[in-house]
Length: 329
Image 1 (cartoon, rainbow, N blue to C red):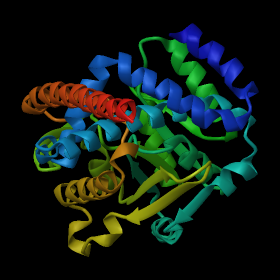
Image 2: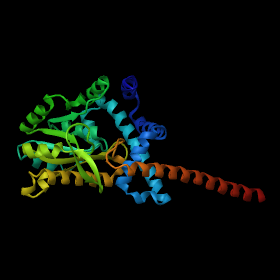
Image 3: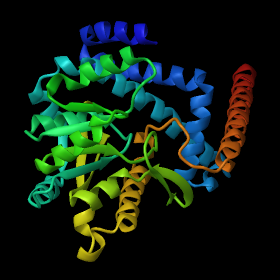
Image 4: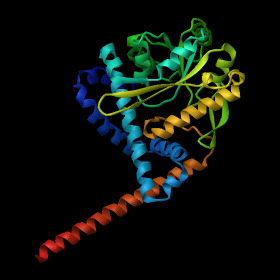
């Protein structure tokens, strides 16, 4: 896999930029067809977002299929654009993102205790973080360790090209660096939609228990840093919408140091954006602790395959009827 990514990092930036969109569709559809395990897990996750009733009707199952397939397309698009990042001018990054709610970020920084940017594996998250640095913000992002360290170094070298600082999670210096960044009234970005390492808590997420990172809420309580949500999604062409939303500063004063209240607010913000743009949520690993969604996903995929088979038969019958009419004339 590393060699494939290394090759892509050389070839993709040499391609015309207009090729990235159709290439993302082609490779995304291919991944959707052959990555059965990832498709089943993405379907299980999306059943929580869209609701189990989506699998009751054929129209609902079509919506589920299109949403999951678009998740693969968007994920591929993120990788292809990531390979190009070192060669994209800062001005282009700024121009491609339409920002909203930057005043909430300014209000959080005005508190003077640093800002914890809470996001998710959602939309063009690399570009949104690059936009922050391009706008002059100092940004640090903790990242999970990968089994293949060469892969981690390759991806971080691409993403660091415009000045973002990344901290591999797992060594003793990571937390000290995060605390130092907040004391300097700078930004730390943490994804809160999937517990990977560290402390996690079980909370209701789209109405079902899920284990999510408790770190952002606990850090906010410990340091007094403000919590701000940051989410971006793709528009037509190369344009992207970015939006910042207050989390801790939107709460009553007495709840801003309550980790349970902060965690509930984080979850509510994530739910709002994921529900509005489900195809932008790019999580292909388990999030919820229950097994019923996995069983439901298997059932939904089987029903979807049957729907497509029936659709082909119906179209074939209609085609045969039309051919018969033409023959009689």
